[in-house]
Length: 114
Length: 116
Image (cartoon, rainbow over all chains, first blue to last red; front, top):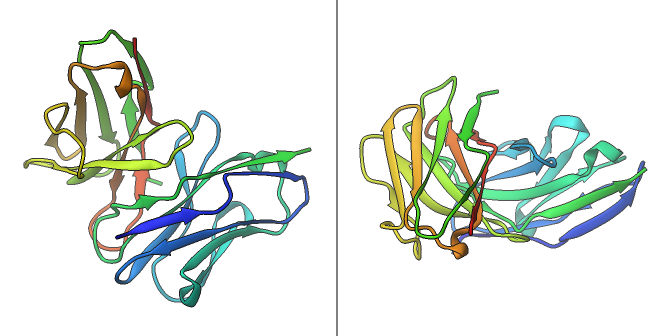
């Protein structure tokens, strides 16, 4: 069965700290992977996506993620977080080649303390 | 990027009434849209795939007679929660991909439904 799991449900960091949010997936075939962010009261927004090619993907706002096939992981990273990064982050995965019917992880709430 | 608009953003209704939620792709055509539901402190769960001009495809465990989906045009899909009950209170989100293949999907802002 297709699944996406996120390890951290709630993360609290001070500004300038480094961030890494874990995401593991379980898919039978080739997979597309995404990280979405939801700021309070706003739409889900795409941070970055991996379809193929370079496993290190750079997204908006200084975020990046690395696809490690051997570990079935797609962790999200940012070297130095800001207060404005306070939001909920969702990892998602979908079968490659089809419409983007994705399975979401449970989300990680990130709170950045000034 | 492309824009998907959902309306209303929040709604309160009485038990037994029906509520319609609209999902519009504003600057692109979407032959397929997805409806998700999010319970508090849980992930988004796919409810159904809405297909323009044909019947929606429901995920296992989702009652199609309770959650009516209509995709009458290339820019509009509607989700109607019929005979709503308090347990239907949730956050409903739609998304629309730009097209088939490896393309991005854009999300609406979500609808907070509260049934009292």
